[in-house]
Length: 156
Image 1 (spheres, rainbow, N blue to C red):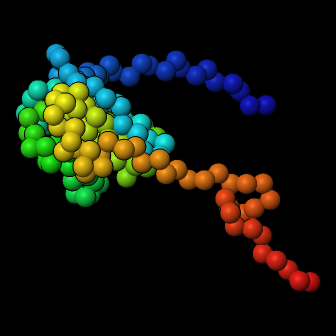
Image 2: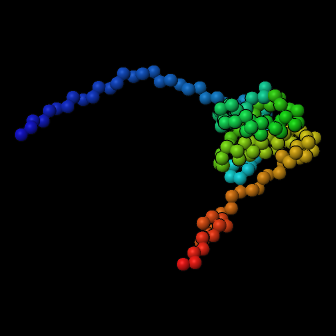
Image 3: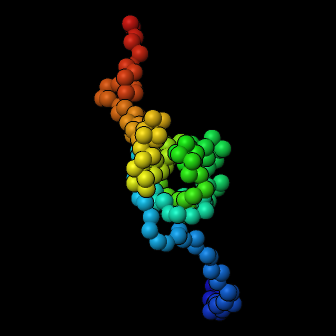
């Protein structure tokens, strides 16, 4: 018959210094706020007077955007109004894919710029940046493979 051995109590590991992470917070003070939408993406945009930096979901613009094209999409309203580099922009965006999120941010920035200066409305509206792009994927219908594709017909 095997004998039972007592297990010694586990000693607590040495306490290590816990590293504190610095969380980047957006600037404080007066800001201009607007929501932007595209498909299922919603972006909550705040424009502060500042140095032209972007903070999107606590990430800088370079880390958030995977391509330069998406960066250009986001910066476009500032470029056409000549206000690039004049605002610090913080954004909370959720839902959808990366392209829809970039376009939602662009829509939000455009709307916030109009709250900043109503005279920019004509310039922004001419480029079609104030219109919410309503195109959303159509839902799948019962008995079909996709929204409109029917099953393949079989004669026999």
